[in-house]
Image: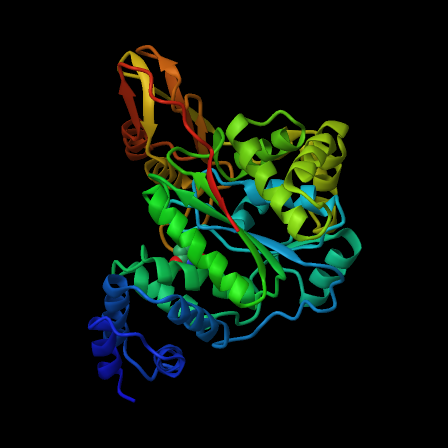
Length: 433
Ligand code: URA
């Protein structure tokens, strides 16, 4: 086989066989195929797309490029969730204790943030002592004993995806449905989950800008999961503005605590409880979604949900006193209010721009090597649909940097103010199963 012939075949819109896909993926992972040929291959896939079968084969080729986590010593149906990436997305912090409370094993492998999106692992590290590097044995023991554990990805899972994702990032080939679907699903399959709930974000802060595209991505991933015998549900959720009111790290922990106490914002609570309910249903704890949702609400109002979060922090070495005393979390030195310059209603908030502003304040990384300031972030005071008058605070920037003009300009420009009230926003657009 010659790579140039396979690039040509894809460029002309023909379907590749499983052997041909493997030849390209494994050859690149081993360093036998140069970047320029894979770049051309990815661009051909970008424009020609892939059939269902090709996408499933690409997924399995990524899975087979490295190690697979063996979670077989964990009893029960192991559930995991994955978000395609958002701003202010602290859903994992909320759903782990909720779902685990019903005896469903949540074996969560999470990543770090890069660019405008945050990562759950970074958020948890703002809690003093919290260990995200668990040995495979400790991870398994914690899930068996407490029904929950979270860890950064260990071992050499899906190295092909890692290498290809880095290349996609610099060749404008990220926003391709078969490439995103195979990238996401390969990581979930390799990390050993039996059931997967996917949070597919759509809007200004997401890879998928239209609901139609997001639904197609959701359907593609659900089909891959099912074809590989994983129970899979995808929930298409809004990312036309940041989720909830907090964007950053320590401040997102505070907002997760609020939701688990029943004091969370409407959007954050609705998305978190929907995802947690589907996870609990797939994990076999409830027969129906409605039953699960009601039980989640009762768990929160009983105070048991917040106790389960404390337990998660304790078992991973963190200081769980932060739950009752948020002053123990890192705090920024400076707080700068961004004010409205017009009267009207907030019509849109560009979530990606808010993510970039938070990154500039120190809450995220421009490059993988950057250090995060856990205290930095943004509080969204106004959300889409809110009325504003000139001089009202739109958002508050938290930082330890004495100079943050660029972040301030980016955050200000993220808000659009219109004279008329915009149509009400939706939080959840579709459930694909
Ligand atoms: N998240 C991933 O893991 N991969 C993609 O391609 C896009 C989002």
